[in-house]
Image 1 (tube, rainbow, N blue to C red):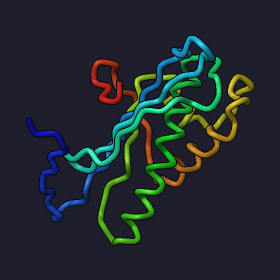
Image 2 (cartoon, rainbow, N blue to C red):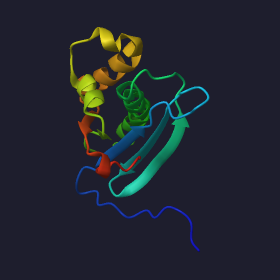
Image 3 (cartoon, helix red, strand yellow):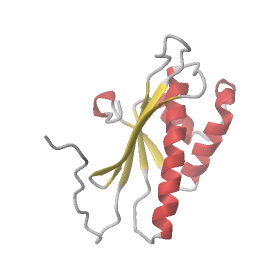
Length: 148
């Protein structure tokens, strides 16, 4: 039996596509009610990063848990963006796919609401990246969520 990642060749005649899927369960740990985030980052057809980790704070809602997952994957995409830029690799704006419409809306909404003030740093970080066109976030139906 073979275990490993299959990397397929990509063609450098076009900008490479970076897609990121992120998900989070809400308060699944029965001991401390912290959520777990999961991600998958694809560089064209190839999976280049995947992880699952427990969030450091307890989320008050499923939207907050998902948004914290978006913030975590945004930091990794920022690193990938910087690396590829330094290597002069042509790529499209990375796209984050999330199955929570509220979390995606918070990322794109310039108005700051009092209901999101407890996650202010994550909100500002992701919005800054979206406004700078370094990444974008879109809703994906739960059935098409690869990071679930």
